[in-house]
Image: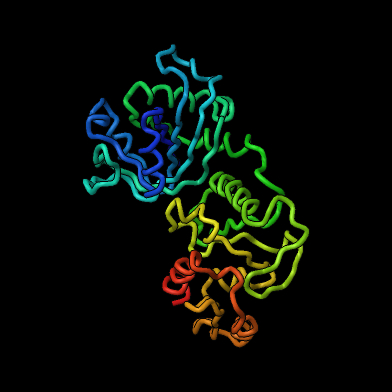
Length: 301
């Protein structure tokens, strides 16, 4: 069964929170995990388990259950991508926080009421606040499921870019990532476009036929890269999205689309890829070039 760890991050740690998210890391001082069972709880987390970070809540010196109706200024839901490890390399300026988890952020939300997470989750965060930010571990994904089902849609329905070819995302994780993709889609294309142009083939299509797709895959991108609009491109569902996702086409360092050698696996696949080759990639720019370079090296190799 999956597990969920809850960690409260107080207001003075705002910058450390931002730094950790930028590096896809969370860490603790050894002293914070020296409390009974705290380190063992963190070590029980495995790849795919959830970490819920609550930031800026009410006074923690209240009786049990006192946070159930409180509001958190910020809630971050992440999945563990690398379980507990020790690393003293500098990430945060004030301390090394060497006992770490590597994480992938699924969702960032603001002004979250307690009932959106549930009473158990809010109590876990209150306990964490009273334990110097130690993780409070529970079995199951109740709060993640609650948040995924309670939050409203972040934008109009349509292709959301949540492609999980590896099968690593759970159902609730996909819901949260989809919500984030809707936010990015709205920022990239506007709130209600009448039509969109595929950046690869330049077909003009209804919005539901064009995906807001990451160039450098979201699963390996840093948090800044995930949210960087230069890493988002318009890819049509008629074929360009899958051809690019699987590396059958790529964009060279001059911004021109080319057919990858692996497209020759069948004659029809090569024909589809070749029909797009030679075009100028409409979203190629100085800021997007590094993301296309990553795709060439790691996907279209």
